[in-house]
Length: 181
Image (cartoon, rainbow, N blue to C red; front, side):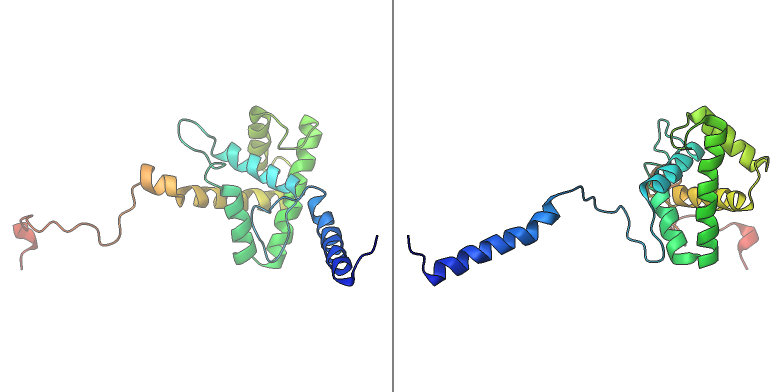
């Protein structure tokens, strides 16, 4: 069987293209939830912060902090608005939270039951657990979780309906005599 040069080059191009694309098809590749510039977050850290926000504002008949994306908001605010020192302190506190949870419950904070999570957070809030970084982490995460929830689409459209300033104009409302000049 004879092969001309054109056929050989075409087959070589197909084989090399397939060899170049094969490694990208193998393995598990997930798209990151959020692109951050100053630090990276592993899955365990994201799960821990997600569990913390869900414990602070749980899901009931209304969506909680997890559904409004509070953990992603916290990471983005840290990335954009915090100094490197504060970011490092935050992530040390995140690690200390998991360590404290392992000591008290035997597992990570994300694996703990909601009652155990509340007990851990209560003891951190009362400063019963040691760790300055953990206290900084908890206060920052709590503050940003509340900010995230109160600025979410759900909260501003269903709970506290947002109106642009100066509000509505009522043209046919009489002016009281005390306000007339």
